Image (cartoon, rainbow, N blue to C red; front, top):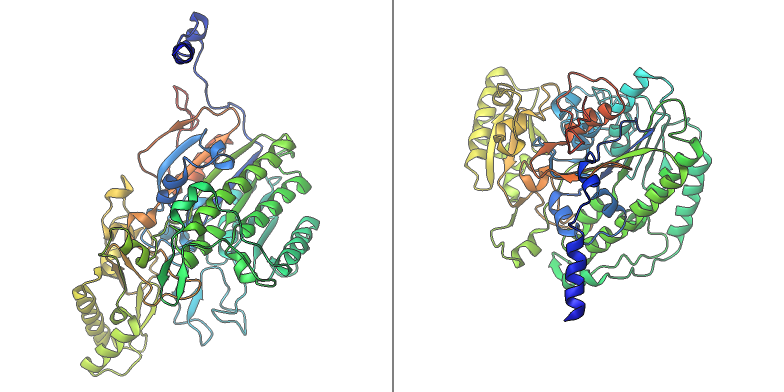
Length: 543
């Protein structure tokens, strides 16, 4: 009892503040400009996943939780995919303005037989197609923060590295000093670029790692309640430990080790290039892709994702420790390109019997064949990419009118479809404003609509309908819906000396670029986002 009383009094003493301290001003956001901006995107890191594990973080994430925490950030548009999401983070612009309306869209006038265009490719390169492409930034219509910084001071260095080409390109932009991504075999960049020593060291280290088998990773104690097998088609998932056979590069990509390699390369580039030690503020963008690959392959509620969250936490901690050792005053923002929804089979076992996979009858080719037969019009009449339906250019104006009306009618009547919106309906919708959780479906669609690239009809499925008809290896859950489990992501800002606070109300990922710009004194205008005040007191980091 005495020990208990002593401990209570010891705790009470913490609330006794000397008079001098009471008169001291509250801590404020640092008045100096950071010398290095570190922008991290954790692919598929939903606000729900962040909430599930935030009390388990003890390392890198724990540091970020001492900064400015916005747990309800929004990729506010309807096209919650990797490329559109990454295009918003460092541009301050929604996909309607970045031009990145989806991971893939249709260009019927493309100078090749394959009309499906990937968001980070150049379809004009001879001999390429959607699956064998040349990486390019040509589709991104707006500058990134790094480009804006270079325009203001050409001495700024811009670096972007990621586990996916589209993440590196969309966050780096058009003018980069170094840009590297994992191409499935090694770390690649644009043709003709010299390979820095640190990139070659990373290539060699990863090649040696893949050449060896990987033993199962340890399971943290708090992950054990999730250690439960779930049957998904022909696969048994939910109990994985990332054991890997020698030479399996695909398994490496969908494992914590791939994030560790990207962050190690990023740390090496910071050191070798002496980022943050030049006359201007530098910026490095880092795309951590493993969470997305793991989510797609195993879902996000099993041991696989639990291990990934623990390993990523430690990877971030090691990365920040390396940055600390440089002595550079750096500023971090961490967010995600989109959220995600766990696989249908496990959701059904966890009190969600209404969960479903999309009916094959909704597939665009199937609907097109039915409409062509009923209207007696020769195919092709419709082409599809993601949720966009494109009417064939071979149709006459009268045929287009009939096909579009019939497609809209049929889709609107399907029980799994929430809305079928024509391009005219979307284009007539004003660009949304106000809290993103209040936006209508048409407003969410408008935020990712580009008249030159979007389809003639947009199909949006109802909540809890997974757009995967038949799950298979590497693809059991996904994202891309207009619903909040795919739209909501955390946004975390941290800098040494920054007073921490949490703001639970909604903000947007397009707010990140103007917020960072303000901290370095860079004037920006005309963006979709707004500056978020990172000073929790009377000060204002936006001024």
